[in-house]
Length: 99
Image (cartoon, rainbow, N blue to C red):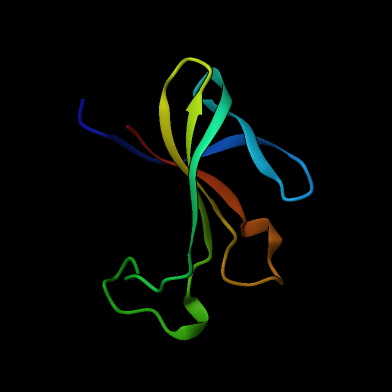
């Protein structure tokens, strides 16, 4: 099955001192995360919506997780930490794709 791309903000339940994801809600369905298969960070710059390259202060900070749910579904999600510690309201969880 080819990956299904979403790119939408979702609600995620986290636990522990490091705040790892334990559940995620997609539309009206809640998935319990049974395993974090892989995790990595991305501190890249990437293009902006207008196509120009970002400046150093516009770099993104994301924590990615490949998670397996109790229903054996695989999702790639990430926590977008924003570009500034001064704006915690911009932090959000994104469902990137379903594998």
